[in-house]
Amino acid sequence: LDSAKELIYAKSYADVGVAAICEKAKVQKGSFYHHFSSKQELTLAVIDAYYTDLKAVLIEQAFNSGLPPLERFAKFAELSIDMQIRLHKQTGHVYGCPLGNLGTEMSTQDEAIRCKLDGKFASLQKLFRATLQEAVDRGDVKGINVDITAQAMLAMFEGCLLLAKTHNDPLILRQLLPAAAQLRL
Image (cartoon, rainbow, N blue to C red):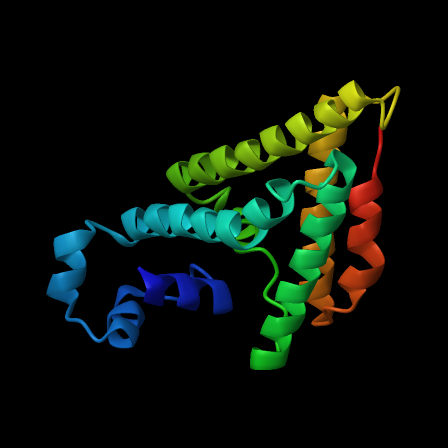
């Protein structure tokens, strides 16, 4: 699973075959098929693993930090920027969001993968919405549609990561992600 996570994130779903995953994991194909019936099934598990990692590295640290609601978005942006800069220093590449990458590549190719990703993005949007609602309830922000703003913020975060990946420049995130964290509709 870890080998598949790394390979799919660094390359793409299409560029990574079962043989490459087995080679990186130092296992035989028989071992792979003992645990997973297909590359698709493995990818569904990879999506869950990506989300678990995202929760540990970004979500828990930003949204369970005790910070006021709106500052949590800024913390989420800061942690995302730091992670992409660190990965760029290690690899020379900006990889972006693993969920967004798979969504862009696979949403028109595989319905099960699309649905799994949709569920993960829905969870993030729900978290953003709850945080925005808390900000409204506290009087920190007024006159916004929390549903639309949560969806727009998520779209902007993902778009910022895509641009940084396309330019292979994580510093773009320093300019763009803070704006995503402040978006109000």
